Image (cartoon, rainbow over all chains, first blue to last red; front, side):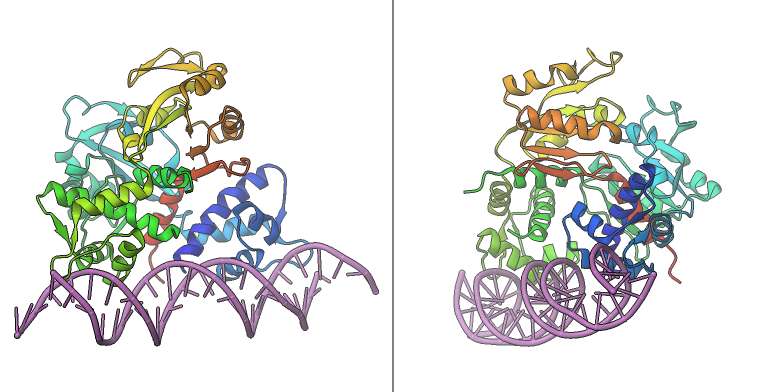
Amino acid sequence: MPKAIILRLESYLTYLGQLRANGKTTATSEELARLFGISSSRVRQDLVALGVVGKPRSGYDITELERMIIESLDVDKVKRIALVGFGNLGRALAGSDVWSHGGFELRAIFDNDPRVIGMEVAGLRVRAITELFGVIKSEGIEAGCLTVPSSAAQQAADLLVAAGVRGIWNFSLIEINVPAGVIVENQRLEQGLMTLSYRMKPKA
Amino acid sequence: MPKAIILRLESYLTYLGQLRANGKTTATSEELARLFGISSSRVRQDLVALGVVGKPRSGYDITELERMIIESLDVDKVKRIALVGFGNLGRALAGSDVWSHGGFELRAIFDNDPRVIGMEVAGLRVRAITELFGVIKSEGIEAGCLTVPSSAAQQAADLLVAAGVRGIWNFSLIEINVPAGVIVENQRLEQGLMTLSYRMKPKA
DNA sequence: TAGATTGTTAATCGATTAACAATC
DNA sequence: TAGATTGTTAATCGATTAACAATC
């Protein structure tokens, strides 16, 4: 499935949940298109790629659409994840419900600062990095979230990979090197701000 | 400038800073291409679009490249920004240095919870939402960062826009409606996790 | 039935890669 | 000079829009 379609399916899913919460049961390609600023034929092609069929005159069934997108993104499968780096951002994420949106379950938190080791959040105790390998193995953790400083990111990633993690959600600025087969999804907050800066630039 | 090029220029900029920190003074299109998994001709075309000229055999001057990208993204122009929503994420961002990467300067923080109003962070006092309009005007704030719950996001955005903000960095899940001319840059953490989920999905 | 909306194909658009002469 | 790397053009690829017959 093309990456561009995946990104839109994610947007559809979020919005469909809101529509359903408002009591709607169907949605048309034209509605979705208008909201996201794309053509209705693009929406229909996305949904064909997804494998859903709509009904002329009424559109697509919202519940079915949600179900198919969730299945396609594998969001319904629970995947255990560990957080590495309990700084400002790590704390914010640990205490939030972001994880569930991707089907992840936060199962462990690590840091190497003695002042934060032992703290409790979301029912978890912050552990020393030295425990990382063993805990990831014993808990069957499949993914890691990197919220350490950029200077420590590669090393932390190496530890996660050595322990058998298959996917990394990376908040650090550096480009992380991992062996083939390990997935790195970069979440660069700084890039969002740079793009905002560019888009706000007065046109000459 | 095409959006795809902008996104890559941002990546180049971050990486070039790291190269420079390591003592390098030039970079070739092939080096950058390898790191980001694209072709060297794409890199060269990006840099032509940017307006830099390289030297056969040695490549591009890192300092000049950085300067041109910064100028192109308008990162060197300081833009004042206000944070709305002092929850977990708002706290993490307020105390961080993300702002400077996009050329933004955090000048005000707002929330409507009496328990957090009055708290201090990054040299700023958290103010009541009721003060928003006046402070944005008097401080000449041009942008806003939305870290409020999704249910309050549209209303908060309306306040920011009414006060004259031109750009919004939106962390909420909803699609915000703004008048033409106001820029919304969505930073959907949940989508990052959904993409990670999809990419980690075992192939059939 | 009439009409709105789907599913599908063709046309357009934009982005990426390949190739190579020019050049330091 | 020789050779590595740029700047540039053409070819390929993928994504988006337009258009319209099929259908509920």
